[in-house]
Structures are given as C-alpha cells and as structure tokens.
Image (tube, rainbow, N blue to C red):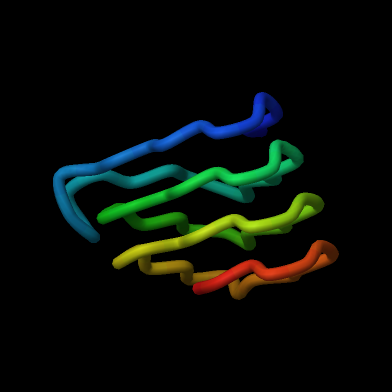
Length: 68
C-alpha cells in the first residue's frame, strides 16, 4: 500500500522491477514509473500517474484525474 501523498516510485524498467501481488494507492499525487505489478492496482486517491508501468491484473480507479 502506498498511503502518503506525493510518493514517487521509479523502477529499473517493466520486468526488471516487479511488485508481486496487488497494490493499493491511497495517497494523492503519487507516481509509479517503469515497473511491473503482477496483480491489480487499486487507486483510492486523486492524480495518480502510472508512467511506463506494466499492470498485469488491471487498474481500478476510485479517484479523479488518474492516468495509466
């Protein structure tokens, strides 16, 4: 779970940096970049950005202005 606001998590690239399982984002203005999530990403926040992220289980967006 990523819960603080304005967290940026940058990986080495999809397939190189892997988060196993599901991930929930509850902090606003968070960025996940260049990584793979093997499960589902649930965004319960606003302005999340999944740049260059490979999400194998799909994305559920419950906030506003989220981009993936």
